[in-house]
Image 1 (tube, rainbow, N blue to C red):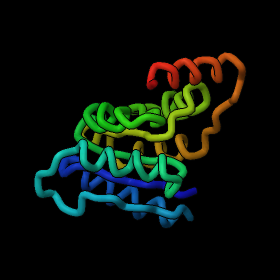
Image 2: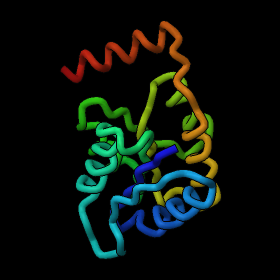
Image 3: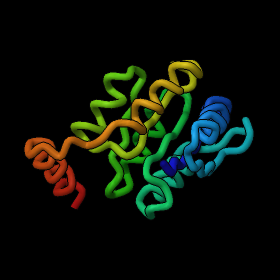
Image 4: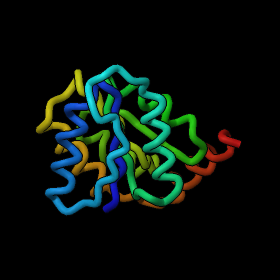
Length: 146
């Protein structure tokens, strides 16, 4: 799978770990920054990852900031992006299966590397069910975006 990754300075270390781990497990990784711990603004990197998903350069996106919340808010401002914060595996798969989430947001100050790997793996492996009730709800989300 093609995965775009990005982070702010708070998420840099975890993003670096996940980018390396994703590549080692056979995924194509598009690292959109940041590339250091120098302070930066998370909306810039959230938008870059979200745009890569929208453009088709990536199948899914992973954004890391301190809590995951700011990155998620910013990513969801792009029409067609459905980003969610997950710090447990149930949410990581359910948000794809039911809500067709295409960007996972993580908090580097909330979880560690091992759990982050489990969450990303679960998120990547999950598939949207396409059940009528879920499609109907996604259609309603799209209507809100317009």
